[in-house]
Length: 535
Image (tube, rainbow, N blue to C red):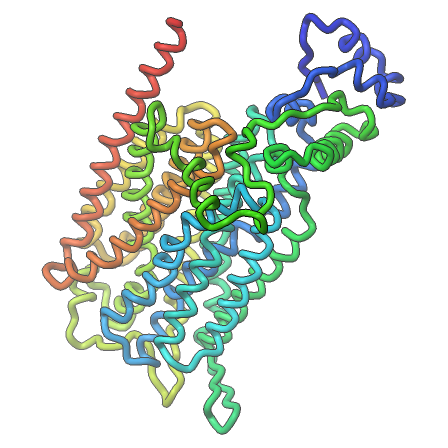
């Protein structure tokens, strides 16, 4: 590992050129090497990149799946649940929106807590609570109870989803940070394959267990929800074994613990003993007024005031204009992605039930198709072809994401977003008039590129702000994205009643608006670069 050293520190250079001294370094040697306090970026850059970082990525895989497992489960159970509970279109929309309403309503609370109680601890309890809510959703016997539990599942999932990107990025230096956020998005896209695979094996099965004289029924879609919770519990267990973010430890003044984490990362990455880590003194990047060190001793008023200090920079220049545009960009991006994605299994179910190779609109407006599942008593049997098509879409999403990560090595993220938005807008605008394999291909392409665009916007936001604001920035931009999902699921059913084509043309319009926003952001970035160069 090549360490970046300051030119004016001769002793420090000589120390690193002597391998034996590096292995036998003592605390006195370390003090000679780095007598001045180091900030987070300096400290993390000296840990290098190696096995510790790769292990973090492996542990991160189940973590990225948990949020999608909780938020997407209503999409896969809808073909069975609409038959089981005899749902109206409004009730279907409430099932989709409950998770995201829970996320939006708790976003600011989670944002305050992220920099208060610690990254790792909040991740663990948030994921554990979401797993419990998902498991209980599989036991409910009333539809309104299911909606309430999905709401609280959204509340519990909100923090871990946005915090996960921040938590992971704080174990990497600037050179690898942006790439890691994209890699994390690539791992999360695996959920698009895994979840429909689980649904394929469970929901079409003839499962119907009754307990307590028929008052407790466990059938196929309930078993699916409980199985999804198993992945969530696994993620909670893995997070429990992770280290706390060293950036958070530095921010709250726990420098000894932060130094211990840095030394652990350094030792596992380089193979050198922890004592040879070339930094012994750390300094906080956040002032005492900005940090929240002791929750029990803080009043509600002081807690709100401290929280306002955290989000205040986004309402002031130079962050007000770019952050507002980025919030709007993810609002429209997640609106187009999730409004379309969450309704795909039900759309496929309706097309299959129509028993014909018709266009999307003809199938969806068929008056002969009332339900998409075969009802037998209290059991709803769903055609497994629905989930085969969903797996095909998920596989395309997963593959396209890694291709996009490769492209980012040679092309700016802003330009990638522009190209994908143009392709997505054209594809969704002709979608209502397609049929057969063309419908499936366009579905896969659209979900894939919009999922990539979502991660690109988060990455753009994370790299545009300093580390001291990154946690709140990611949390806020994702919050606005979720508001877009709720808004989309409210307006699409209304538009669908007016015209079959109108929902898809509306999504295409949002794609065009995204182009204008990203172009403005690029112009602001270019002007900022010119200002820095001139000064």
